[in-house]
Length: 323
Image (cartoon, rainbow, N blue to C red; front, side, top):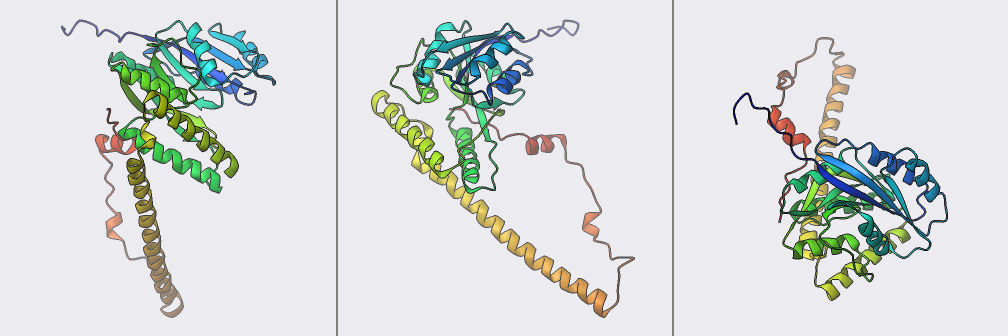
């Protein structure tokens, strides 16, 4: 291409966004705002389809209020709750684009999450992408800490072998999901892989969710997920990466090692701080030194700005290895 020839802009990738909701009046409004206000460059959201399943609160009313402001928003109502798979199938039946984005009604996407997921489909080998799940629980509480720890491990696992959920995007290479499947994201993953397409993790596409707040809810959620994955493996022969006990154990041991390093560092810090305070007490109480003109710590005097490359590496998520 000659120097005076303008660079061609990359083609726009159009997508349909589907939201599954059951009694989500507390979140559906801000979720729709977040979808409508996504920062998009190479991606276009042509429609936002909300499937409201058996809602008895103000979910449908709130969606209709947003429909008046944005013609892309559509509402599909299921009179009774039939399960998420049924809601996903209803979305698939109405979605007009080849690239579909599916999000749970109790989550919130980061401002460029859709862009960072959908732009990957510029590569025709990609069949499915998924976002980086970040919990909003307070980690000070034990159950909240467990949610943070579990999703941190899951993030590390996804960097090796993607295991996607909460917010996913996929090519519509199928029409529906069998009604007996509870883990819809995992089944989509299986369908995509069997068609010879790649599953990729998008660590820079963040989706926020609220983890369980009680031990009972934590067990309830993990119990149903594990049962659903076992059913998927037994009936459809697809094993998600989180069922690889050896890989998960290796990542968990990495967390244990980091915790031991932290404990060791805190111990050394306490000893050094104690020595410094004793010496400071000696200076002030015995030698009557106030250090108006102090001994210079020469190793603190040279400030070297990090290079652009090292800054990028420090601030960016690790490179994703795709399978």
